[in-house]
View 1 (cartoon, chains in turn yellow, cyan):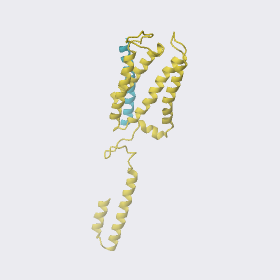
View 2 (cartoon, chains in turn purple, brown):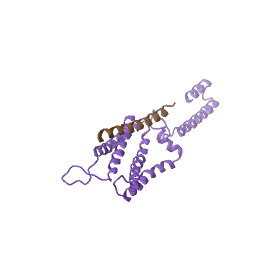
View 3 (cartoon, chains in turn brown, orange):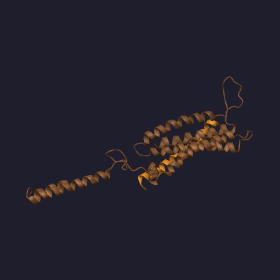
View 4 (spheres, helix red, strand yellow):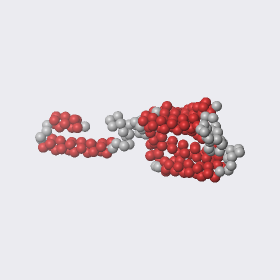
Length: 196
Length: 31
């Protein structure tokens, strides 16, 4: 789980840096092929971005698989805002102050706004959750050994109440039988001990 | 320190380590 989380962070960093390299030269580039290329890609940027995409997808899947039973899979939800806000920041930065020799482009700012909304809205949604539920994303209750589910999800307190009222009723019934003489002192004592 | 706090710290360290790893990786492929 920790390894996949590290790979996920590494992939996102690689994607982020690869994107910055492309933004540095105007946001589009090409390499190879039979056409005349107006703008060659920065060396390694394509590899970094491809590796970033692939690594991110694989690491996210592995992380969810590994973290699900431990109850930490919710951490991945923060990956979405992290991805969109970081890439949106790149758009903003190069939109507001274009790289040297590049034209001022409103398109980048538009993309930045779009990414900020896509990344920021879910993050605000998480923050708007009740603090307890938000904390539960990162602070899961330990899984109960019987069901493997988190203790919050199973209804143990309710069940316990049900069980205790059942026990009380049984003891009342036994006490009534004892009073009527159907059960001896010893039998009543043993039956009561068994119930408790 | 509870096991959950330890796990949270480990996850934060993983993310930090991953970011460094990503930077090293990028430097390696870009140069």
